[in-house]
Structure formats: C-alpha cells, structure tokens
Figure 1 (cartoon, one colour):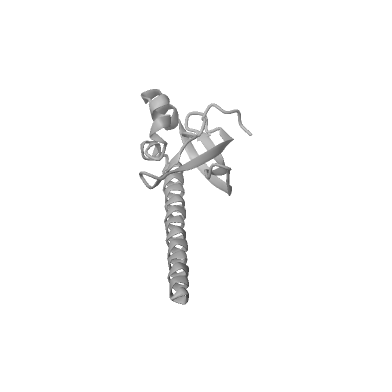
Figure 2 (cartoon, one colour):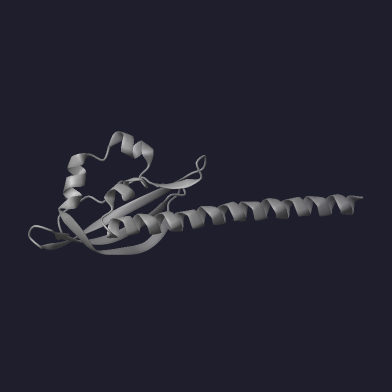
Length: 141
C-alpha cells in the first residue's frame, strides 16, 4: 500500500513539474513572438502597431500623442540590432537594442540605444514592454 501511495505522490510531482515547464515554455514562446513583432513594427516604422506592445499602465501615464507620431514620421529606421537578453530579480526580461535612424529631411544618420524591459502579465498571459518606445531625443552614439 505504501509503495502505491509513493508511486502516486511521485506521479503527481512529475505532472506538476511538467505543467510548470509547459507554462514556462508558453511564456518564453510568447516573449519571443512579442519581441519579434514589436521589432518588426519599429523596423518598418509602423509605430502605431509598436504602441500596442507597450504596457497599458505605462501608456496611461505617458500616452502616445499626435506629436509623438509626427516625430516618428520625420525619421526612418535604417538598422535595428538586438543585444542579448537577461532576466532581472522580478522575472522581467531586459535587452539593449542599437537603432540607427535617418532624418528624412537632412538624410543625417544617427544611432540611439533602446534599453527595453518586458514584464509578463500572469492574468492576461502576455508580455508587455514597460519602457515605452525608443527615445528619439537621445544624442547620437
């Protein structure tokens, strides 16, 4: 009897572990997909699409305005190079992206650094960008 009880406990432990791994995998896959589509929106200057990846709480504090859209229309993204990702103590994913911009009026090229931080929303089961859109007012690097 004790052996059967031990087998059941072991089986339950294995199932719990597998379900945790499966949910982590979904989270990881969701992150890869979100970062890929966000990067594509930035690369193609589809800024209204990129805004949809920003954490709603961040957008409530700092809404995307017509003036912001106007600034993005003045530039063209020429290059978007993602750096390695890391995970902080709260489980948020951080990554640094080098973005090369071309001023449409002057054709001047400059480079900025975007330090992104993504957080996983357990209730919605989705990753949100907490750091907002890249800062176009940065000095060239």
